[in-house]
Image 1 (cartoon, rainbow over the protein chains, first blue to last red):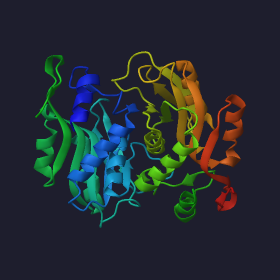
Image 2 (cartoon, chains in turn blue, brown; image 1 turned 120 degrees about the vertical axis):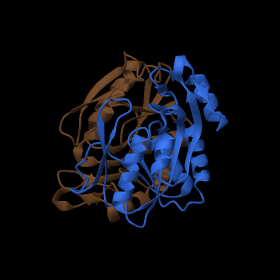
Image 3 (cartoon, rainbow over the protein chains, first blue to last red; image 1 turned 60 degrees about the vertical axis):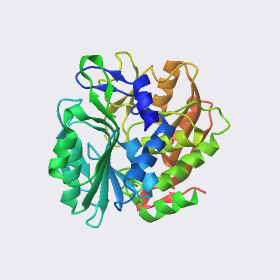
Image 4 (cartoon, rainbow over the protein chains, first blue to last red; image 1 turned 90 degrees about the vertical axis):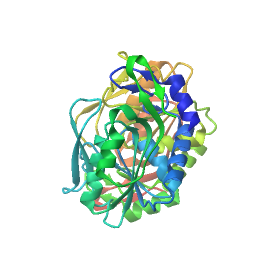
Length: 191
Length: 191
């Protein structure tokens, strides 16, 4: 994804403490056409694993998860952080520390949309510590469905999420752009 | 949008008090392919008004707004309900009563993504009372940009949102499916 890397190099801002501002094209404002390219590429990388559902967490995972689901021809589920009144009483529920908010957030998925026979690809915008993705994976396991892969748009390798997830799950993990160092105001890309 | 109407007839649930449960294909779980058709149709209806940005409110507006933006070849902005640390200090800020949560919610848009020269199409999943859409329209006006249209997936005509918005803004308002009555457990579609 040269296009994505170039866009991060041009518009991304290192706000310190590992926080990458990409809200002019990935979250807040989304470049719809770039996001389609992201979905096509993630879809291509997971075309062989038999995905039946894409799962993400609201809010900023929705755009890349939707375009990936579209590329794969399957539905997408976004875990809710607060329970809407349309959700049944008993739901799959896990918690994860919020990377940017400094407290725990809940992730809720209705048993109506995730079933034992499902083969689930988790997609999110960032792979950082891996805590949100691990919470989504626990929801997949609660439901009895199979986790078949993890795909993210931007991986910050220095936060260790990949190693953490690899220690827990034997599934392919793909990220489209890796950032290896954000110390001293830098944004250093992996090869 | 016969496909959408049939899907609502088949899977939609009237939960009472005007609440339509469509979380198996529009929110929570999203039928990605149906959502692309929604975006294509909304894009077609607003292809003549010179849209430069699509604006929506997180969370369930994101999917239809993204696919509409894709059809129109423009970026999409989703107003945030809580301020991320990547957002600057001074932002466009409006409040709207939440239809389903019973309290006021804030909508925040960064001046970095919405400018005076923009021509904005507001897209949301539901047109009910019109309060959220009106709050988004006030943000458009704060920014000095022009509001050029309002497009929604499902309109509940009995909540009066269209008349309210028409009294405030002289722009085309389009919804793909109208529901005229949800009393007594019914889901009655408009023609």
